[in-house]
Length: 86
Image 1 (cartoon, rainbow, N blue to C red):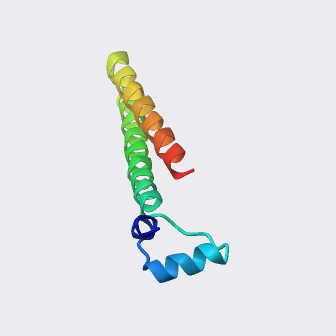
Image 2 (image 1 turned 45 degrees about the vertical axis):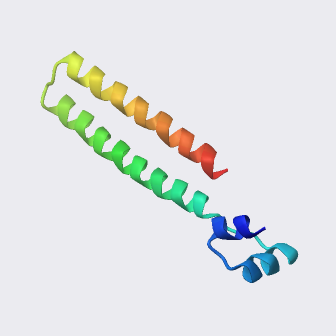
């Protein structure tokens, strides 16, 4: 029980009270996953901007294809983070 309270960032008494009353107990691990998700969403936004800029500047197909592959990789990372939050 003490380990669970530490994971939630709560004192043992506060953790016990919330669990016994049936309240939701947030986990620090979930908070870390949310922070990671926000970071990855920012990466996706930047990559989307780069793809748009590349298309506007008439970049070659290989460059645009490489950017799209990178964007797909980031989307997979976001999906993994979402699974961690659930």
